[in-house]
Image (cartoon, rainbow, N blue to C red; front, side, top):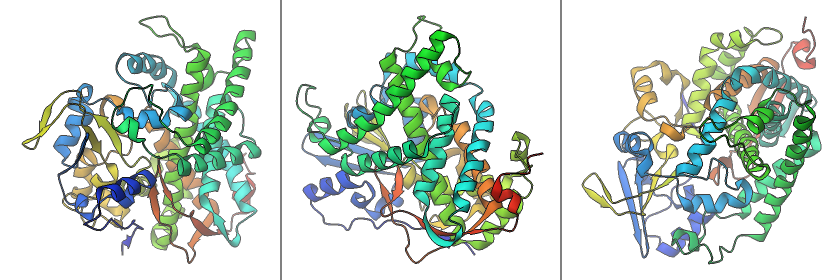
Length: 463
């Protein structure tokens, strides 16, 4: 029987505008009414600000795919993230974004296949680390999965494992950044000139500076290797040496730090979020967990890329996790010109919100939308809405370039972890909150128990 997945409480009706703004600055979920899980569209109108949230699949496609150039990424979110991500591909628009994409796409081509060995090695090390805690005690899985996902992207970028001290520093700094940095500032929301102070959180800027200092150090070291002709053939080298075919431009050092920031931070943070929630859902439903564990026995020792074709049920579990807990809960866009949605005028400069969180739990699209039911992906309802109401990696021109990477990573890591361990829930039920990604308010804690195969735990027997 399918289980209800944890869901945050919606805000009650009748709350005033000021309180709603305060709730949104802290957590997007707590500021949203329950009717958004049924509505095709909703609009918010306050002085100097209009926003439109769209759930109707046809409108979602218009915004993200068919008319994507008319709905560029919102400057409100970009300004919020700039202390951490700079002018990376995540935050830019128009010609600047296209020029960055012209370099990134060729550099990223083939990366998922090349990265498989990095994923496998990081997974083996994660299994060894977790085995030391797998005695039935409660383990904070968000940190464990953050370390694993950061290690994967670090190895993929820089051909080296992530030191434990660096992993802890990145996890702590990024978590604190999300907690201390509001999702938007009032000057940005009101589109005031850039010379108007944004009053960014000093604590958030401090945490961003810690992370970016680490990235600058990594980029500097790689540039020395490139200049000496000793750099390994990995993603960082590819990004730093790929030339824009149209302009001959390469990323400068500052531009490279921005791009590494988005790959390293957003890439590992979204994966860590998805894997943490997946393990909680599996712990919640032991029948599904044992189905994944049985499939994991089909993995070679060590795992091979061809093994992924055997992991169909695990893929469905990962898709169901992404449906219930899309790592990025909302995509913010700006209307470049006046248009119309469902007979309603959308003025230019209005914010347009596409919310995977609401779309993928929409009561008029999905059967029993709040249930964890990986079997739905083999039904007509699941297959139909996978095409038009399932966008965990966005869609259209701005679809995440790491989507293929993330899907391979999710399935492989779940297989390796479930082959080695059983996961059980504890008394505390995690409460989802939405900052930059969907995390738990107070962490996700599970009991971890070793399975019987000692070779799996030790990471040996690779002959």
